[in-house]
Picture 1: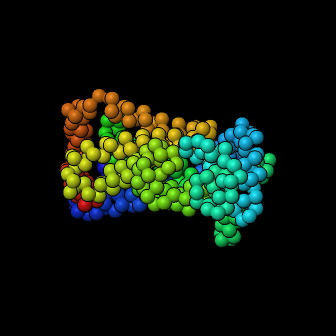
Picture 2 (picture 1 turned 60 degrees about the horizontal axis):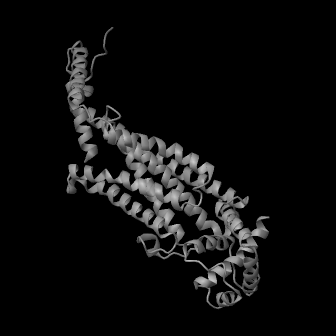
Picture 3 (picture 1 turned 30 degrees about the horizontal axis):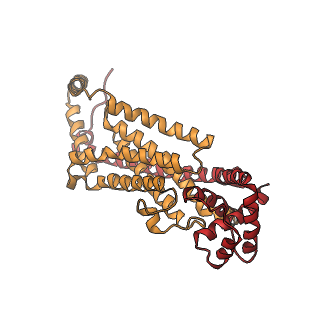
Length: 149
Length: 229
C-alpha cells in the first residue's frame, strides 16, 4: 500500500494551520448555532407543556389552591362573597393571583384566609396591601373554580 | 401569520404569559446548565482521555445559553401580575418576601454562575490556575440552582418534570462524583501513552520519507494558539 505524495502546500505548517483554524472556527460556529437552537427548542417545549397544563386545568398551583379551598370551606365562602363584591367593583383578579396568594398565605404568618369583608373593602381601596391581596385571592379563587370546572 | 399566532397566544395565555415564560425559561436553564456541567466535567479530563476543542466550545455555548435563559427567567417575573417583584426582589438575596430561602438560593446560584462563568473571559488576568480552581465552584452553584428549582418550582411535584430533571441531572451528578471522588489523573501513564502514539505515527510517516508528524504538530500548535488568542 502506497501513501499519496505530500504536496508543498500540505507540508507548509502555516498553510496547514490556516486550514485547521478555519475548520475549527467552522465547527465552533456550527456548535454555537446548534446550542442556540437547542436552547430555543427547550424553551418552546417547556412553554408549550406548561401552557397546555394550565389550559387543561391541571396546573399544580391551581390544583393545590383548589384543594386548600375545599378544606377551608365555610370561611372561604364568606370571604369569597365579600371579595366578589370588590371584584365586581372593578378589581380585575386573575386566576393565578387567586392561587398563588393561597400559597403566599402559607409563607406569610397566617390569618389571611380568615380575612373578612372589611379587608375586601380595603382591597378595593388599596390593592397593594397584603390583606387586600388575600381577600382578592378568595374572590379569584371562586372564579378559578368556576372556570376550571 | 406569525403576528396573528402571537396575538392568539397572547389572548389565550392572557395574564399568565410572563409567569409561563418564566417557568419555561427556568426549566430550559436547568436542562442547559445540567448539560453544561456534563460537558465541563468531561473537559476536566478524568473521564475522557483526550481534550477536544469541540467540547470546550460546546461548554462555552451551553453556559452562555444557560445565563441567557436565567436572565429571561428573572426578567419575565418582573411582568408577572401576581408577584409584582421589583428588580431588587429578583436580583438581591433575602429581599423577596415570597419563599425567601428558595428564592435567595436561586439568586445566589445565578450570580455565582454568572461570575464564575463569565470570568472565563478574564482568566489570563486572574491567572489560569487560580481561575480553574474558582471555576470548580460553578458546580456548587448548579447544585444550588437545582435545589431552587426542586424547592420552589411550581412544577417540581409533576412527574414529567421529575423525569426530565432525572434524565438531565443524574448523568451530571454521576460525572461530578466520578470527577470528585475518582482517582487522580494518571499523568505518567498518559504521558507514556502519548509518547507511544507519537512514536507509532512517526514510524508510519517515515515510510513516506517525510516527517509529516512534525509538520502536523506544528500546524496544530499554531492553530490552537491562534484560536485560543
